[in-house]
Length: 346
Ligand code: PBG
Image (cartoon, rainbow, N blue to C red):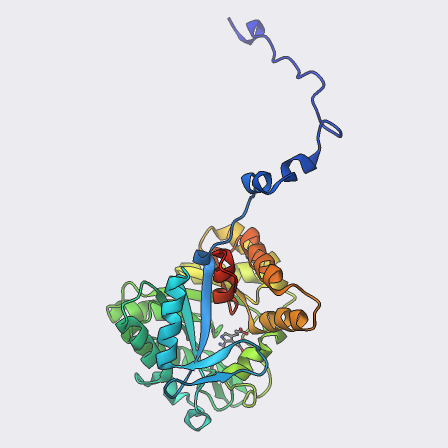
C-alpha cells in the first residue's frame, strides 16, 4: 500500500544527451523553424523616441555629432508625434535646446510654464494622439554651468536641487506630461516628487526614474544636441554612478521603487546590459534602458564608414536590450527601427 508497491519509473533507454541525437541546428533549419522557437521579440511597442525641441516654426536643425537626428520646432514635433503614432511607437521623450541667454545659475527657465518642452507637450496633447509624452526632470538644459543640479560653491546641492526639481516637475505635469523621468540622480527626489504630484492632484502622472544612471562618456552627442557641452564645468561623478559598480545599481533601484517610481531606467544601454539583466530579474518592475546618443552615433558612423549594415545592427542592438530584460528602449533609431519592423524599409 505504500511506495514499495509503486513501480519506479523505467529509465528512458539511451536517453539522448549528445551528438548526433542532439543537433542544435535542427531548430535553425529554416526561417519558420527559427521563428517557432524564438525567445525574444522586438516590436514598435518596445520603442521610445527621444526628440530635441527648438524655438521657431517649421524649423529643423541638424546635430553635427548625431548624423540623421534633427532638432525640431514645436509644430514639427507634433508632426513627428503623428509619425510615431502611425509607426506604433507608444511614447516620445522631449528634450529642449535652450537659448543660451535663458540659462541661469538657478535654472529659472525650468520653472517657466511656457518653456519649450511645456509648449511642445501642450501642442502634442492638443492633437489628441494616442501617445505618451515623457519629460526629463533635471536642470542641465537650463543651468549656466550645465549641471543637473544647483551648484553651491563647489557642490551640487542635493536638497536645494530637489526643491527646484519639484517646481520643474509641477509645470511639466500641468502642461500635460504623461510620464516624468527624473534623470538628475539626486538622493530622495523620487519620494519628494511623488508627494508633490499627489498633493497637486496629479495622481496619474507616472514617474520613470533614471535609477541607475552612470557617469558616462557616451552622453557626449546629447550634450551637444541640447547645447550643454560648452557650458558643463567639471563632470557629473558626484551624482551619476561610477561605471565600475553593479550592486550599487540595485540599491538605487530599490530606493526609487520604495519612494514611488512606477518604472526604472538603466542608462547608458549597450555597455550596461548586465545591469539591465540584474535589475529586471531582481525587481520585476518595468525596466527601461536608454540606447544613448553616443551609442547611436557609434553605430551610424560605423555604418557610414562602410563597416556595418545599419539596418541589421539597429535591429540586433535593440533586440539585445529585450533579451537582457528591458521592457522598452529609448532609442534615436525608433522611427527607423519601427519602419524596419513593419517591413516597410527605412
Ligand atoms: C540630462 C540627460 C542626459 C541624457 C538624458 N538626460 C545627459 C547627461 O546626463 O549629461 C543623455 C541622453 C543621451 O546621451 O542620449 N539629465
